[in-house]
Length: 130
Image (cartoon, rainbow, N blue to C red; front, side, top):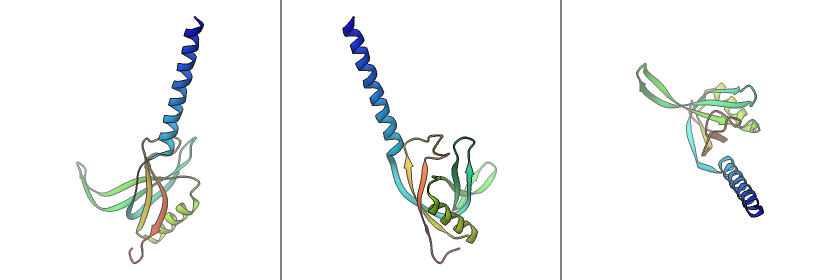
C-alpha cells in the first residue's frame, strides 16, 4: 500500500511539473515574430480586472463581406509596461502617419494579457507618408 501511495505522489508531482513547464512555455515562447505596416486608427485601454491596451491598424485595401466592402484592419495588443510604444502609436494616430509595428505572436491568447495573440513591442514611424 505504501508503494502505491508513493507512486501516486510521484505521478502527481510529475504531472504538476510538466503542466507548469507547458504553461510557462505557452506564456513566454513566441510562435512567430514579424511586422505589419499601415495607419493606426485606434488604441484604447480595455478591461474590467485586467487592463490592456488594444489597437487597430488599417493595413489598406478592402475586404468583401456580406455587408459590403470594409477596410482591411489588424488588431493588436500593447503591454501596459510599453510606454514608449504607446507614445509612438499616439503620435502616429494624431499625425495620421504610416507605421511599421513589430510584434511577437504567442501560441495562445490569455485573457489577462489582452484580446489578441499579437503583442507589439516596437514602432517605427515611416517617413514621407501620410
